[in-house]
Length: 194
Image (tube, rainbow, N blue to C red):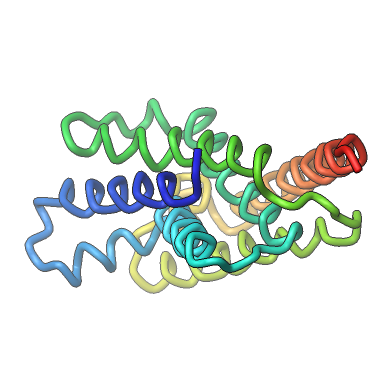
């Protein structure tokens, strides 16, 4: 799958999510609601990078792998924890399919086929910066608004200690996934002819 095709799929899924929020009449309010979610922000970030690639930008191996970690987290967490809790239909179903399944799988295929893979192990902690930034933003936003994007971040119902434990487990899992991505990248890089 080309970067351009994947970017178009991502844009279509983001637009479908925007249109699915028909109960929110103002466009600015829809965007604000969407901006609460790691899924939306990560997919938007990925689309920007893919569009830049179509214009000739060369993405570094570390950035490509960091994006793979983030979009993989979107797919894994949704399918493992959240998908059954928030059933959707119609346009919302298509948006969920695009954002949580097609984009993670599509970018994984793109990464396997096209991304540079010369990675040092020391890059893995850098890939956790985006999830950590998002988590801080989500916690501050949730505390100020009382609206929590994900149940495992809801400090009002779980308490801050429980949320801290959830985040510790999540970041640990992301760190292990990052190590797995780095190991795979190193294997693929060393197996590359020439």
